[in-house]
Image (spheres, one colour):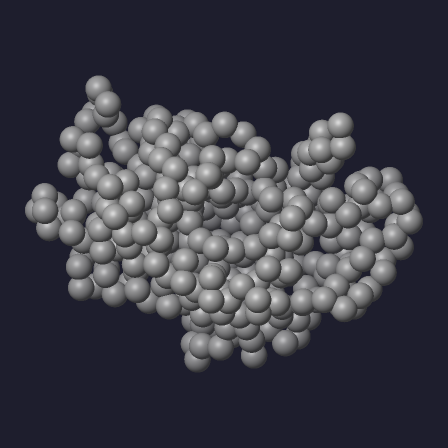
Length: 336
C-alpha cells in the first residue's frame, strides 16, 4: 500500500466479469491503484487489479470490508458492474427472475449503505460511484417495431420493462439517484446497450447475441439456429467504446442516466450474415422458437453527444471481426 495515498484509487465491483475486467485494465493504464472484487477472477485473462477480493457482494459485511479505505480515507471512484445477468436465454425464460432481482438489488443496496456509513465515519464524501444500468429498463411499448428510431433517456417513463432484469435495473437507478439527493453521494449512471467483444462469455447460456452467433457460425457446417424470424433489431457496442464513454462520463459533472450504445441497428439475420461472410461460409439460417425479448431496440445518442461530445467510432463489422477471431481461438482450445 506504500505510495497509494499519492495515487488515484478505484474500486471495481464485478471485476471478474466482462466489462469489469476491461475497466480494471483501463484504470491501471491511467496510473490508478485498483482493487477488484467479484465471486471469481476473470475467466479469460489475468486480473490487472493491484488487489483482488473474492467475495459474495450480496452479503453486506463483505461489501463493507471491501470498501474499507485501508489508510487512504476512501476510494476516489467506485465502478459497480456486479449483477446477475446474461443473454436472452437467461433473462427472458422467467426461470431466474427471483435470483436476478434479489442478488442484484442486494449488491446495489449494500454498496450504497456501506459507502454512506463510511462517509459518516470519516466525515468525507469524495467517492464517486458509477452504476451500470441497461437498455432493458426501457418500456416494452417503445420497442414493438423493428424500425426503432432510437430510445431516448426520457422514454423510460411511464415504465414498463419487458423483464424483471429491467425492472431491477430501473429500481436501482432510482436508488442511486435517491442516495445522491439525500446522502449527497456523487453518482453517474449509464444505460448500456448490448456490449460485446473479446473476453466476454461465449457459451453456456449467458452469452449475448454477437458471441452466441460467432460460436454458432464457427461450429456449424450447414446451418445455424436463430430464435424467431430473425427480423428483430438491435444495436451493439464494442467493449473499448463502452469503456471510453464510461470513463468520460465519470470525468464529467453529468449524473445521467445516459445511453451508452451504438446507433448502428441491424436485424439478427443481418448480424448472422456479417459473421457468415467473414467466416467464408454459406450457412443457412434455421428459425426456431425461443425467447426473443423486444422486437426492436436501438440507442439514441443525442444526449451523450451533447453532454460529453462522445459518439462511437467502431463499426459493427470491425468489432465483430475481432470478436469472431477471439471466440474462434476459444473454440479451438476447448476442443483440444
